[in-house]
Image (cartoon, rainbow, N blue to C red; front, top):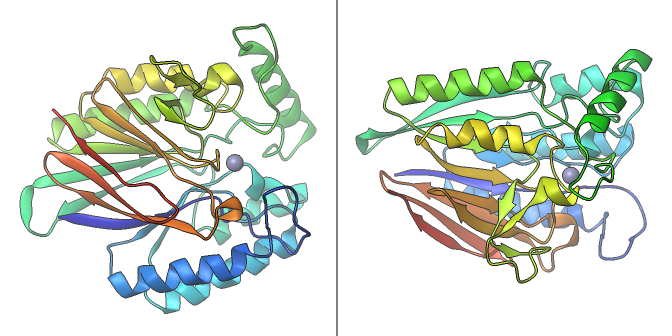
Length: 298
Ligand SMILES: [Zn+2]
């Protein structure tokens, strides 16, 4: 069995509470979750983005905690979120480095099951902030992001939120190439991004039985439909893991489990999860307030 841990939306900040977001509380919650995760000796821990709320000082604060956790044995796989970029433009290149990433911030890796040679998974980690108003570092990039935002109007004609972004045609092509490779090599694939795409249940889904596409509601990647179109072409994809919407959600669409993990910043008492991947299932073991899910795929 392949087993890893997940945390999402720590959004640490030395800031006063805003609504349900208790920024300072994220620190002890993060440490408690990290302590439990370190004790389980999992392969790695997926950090789904928005590690800090904003400002370089807060970024440095959470970065230090990531390092403390590393010393306790946690191996991080970081995903970039929109809040991570709420720092001065000149600091943005350093963000990638601090998360152990190279620009443009998307990457993949393969994990073998130590007990089952046929159970091999490719993790494809997207950077949904690639073209966005907040990750742009120059006036030219900001202009390009504005043009991109205008291209992807909501079904009601409105603009998508400026705290989301788009993936470039190049990133979509790269995603396709990774899934092509996974298919050829008989691997199963998990796509990971800060931004969720779909849910049948959970926050914001109302009573719509056919589910919610978050990009139609302005709460996801502007061109999320293009990501789904690529995923739909590759049956090797069994799961899509995201954060961003702190209430969390779950959905199954075309034999793919869409799991949105709850955000630490506003979840009481805490939330994190362990995920087990077998040759026919994705099992999410939620801890504290995080829900558990069991998905058997075809
Ligand atoms: Zn976010």
